[in-house]
Length: 397
Image (cartoon, helix red, strand yellow):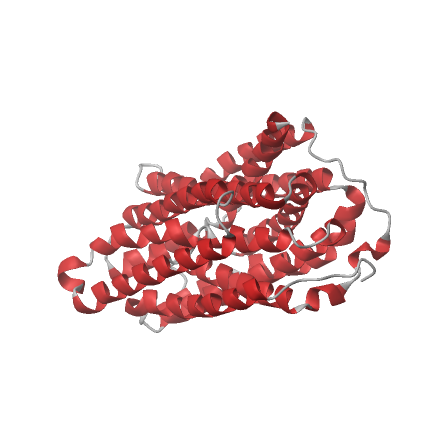
């Protein structure tokens, strides 16, 4: 039985690693295009990924229910594989917008199907552990994309940096083969068109708190993953390679944080775990802001080592919130739940990117840690309401 569970997790982990590399290549793209395009323009670029992601996540629920999780996931992989192969061959800026839209659509399908597969095969704390493991692979994808592109940008082949996406396309082919040979899907393919109904269920207070938390969690994560390299380059005056390396170590610590969480959550209650992580994040952000404000001249390079440590404590939060709610929601509502999560994530990502673009455009990025602290305080307050509010449901809803 354990072998089967591991066989289920492995292709899902590779899938999230692939989409992580695609989604989080934005940090590289921003660095490479910032010499010719304003930060204000680059801030809008992320919307081309997030808006299609939000729209498709709602429209594809019935299609996924009829097609089945595995077939839909394979379709998403083939979709992004073809676009990633084409990206280096098209030498115009507008294709980045099309490519990001394709990535957004693919990830919307992938997230709904992956979380549905986990819901169908895991329960309770094992579900929380599986979510943390899959999300851990998402963070290691960020590490790989920053290390890989950082090395490429400092080599003699820097002008060919877009060809790095061919490696991601190759991984997509491997993932398709793994999924085709797997036996991860056992749920019955739905023929009931009413399955996507029951919107009233998602208006329950606990779920509303959760959706707001998802919005701000992605808001915060996007502020780090896409904009930390620019912060290091602009404020600490390091080159692109070291800026990406610092961001890569943020991802590495995030991977470690989620991997450790997948083990510790089997022993500890999620609420206490979340509070401890948030307090550590607050402490690190405040320490970084103090360094910037009072000791910038002498100790600014300490930020390169301190800021990535946030990943250890920030990364466990999202899977912990997700698993808490996923455990409470009936299987037949999983597709719709995750689609709403994708919408909230997309909105959080777009708004977060515009928020950070405005900060850099107005030249107030020396308050970067402080600006990130504000949405985290909202998350902190809502966590208490999320924990205290019960969720009840009627099967007929």
